[in-house]
Image (cartoon, rainbow, N blue to C red; front, side, top):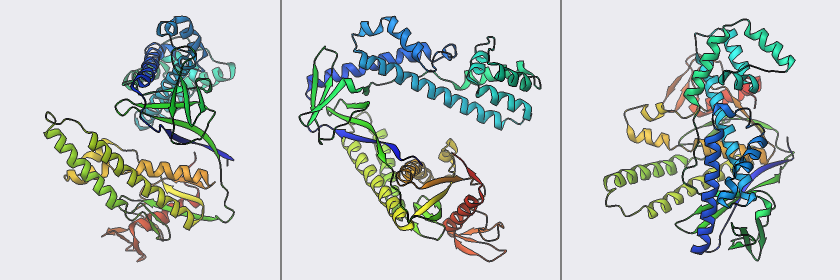
Length: 441
């Protein structure tokens, strides 16, 4: 494993920022979003696929366009805005290709050779760009020979038209929305006097913001603005050393739950109060949402709502982190196997007639739990592996026969094995992980 990993730390202002200084920061954020919107509009379509990798062509064209001079924007902000927007466009194309790949796999009318051709094109940027732009394909000799070999076995015209239709259907143009922040390079800020000096659009003028700590960093940072409270949050990526534990040698299978956060293959439960906290949070959100919708016209604002919502989320997240730390400290795993969790879908919202239960399930902090578990395992050099989860909760972990679920327990009518449903799932997770039926990252 790597000796260091990247994590994000935050810094905050000690006192509200003066209104005049906040206006200067807001002006930078507004111009930053204008540059990003310009990049989205010009280079977010299929015609610019050949320019966005690696992106220096776009940077040169934008420098010559005169937009920076028009906005009177310092280069330290302008260039970062260009590459931030390019990163968003690349991510959007990745999401589009991933969605198309899923649709290809689910299409029963395609033969294996047709699916192979489409997947090859999606993984070959030059071929993909040429096909969606309906232009001539130019590839290096080795790739061209492979493309010809795969393409001769299928109807390329039909498949290329299918690919173009899917791109038109799933690829979307991006936009920034409300400007809430901007990135800064090392040249645009300086730590001193228990705070930070931030460059403005005026030459040789900086805004001083006192901070709540005296930590100093020397990397690209991101500033998120809160205009109403005149506050800012500084997000800094840092590299931290990975901790190695020689005594951590166990292999542990885990199963996630809504009420019990996770259960191990030995039946140990961590996060037993998660259901209580999460139910309180979900019921309060549902009650407040209904009240707000009924009295929207007469409601003066939601300041108290957002403050309490943030407080309840922090309590929930603090408890999740505490229980994950306790799990790693007590179990001392070398490898943790967990079931691959399905992505949320619209079906979750309509899976039953009880709207209260549906809303509670939709508020499940599954993504946050997984994210924090991955981060903490990386920090402590623990291997985290996902296991394919098909029929994993209905299969007996002892004899692999189909079992019966009853009142939270699992019972196997073949071998008579009876245990909690979550422990049986965790035992199957561990068994499949040891056998290698895993998803490699």
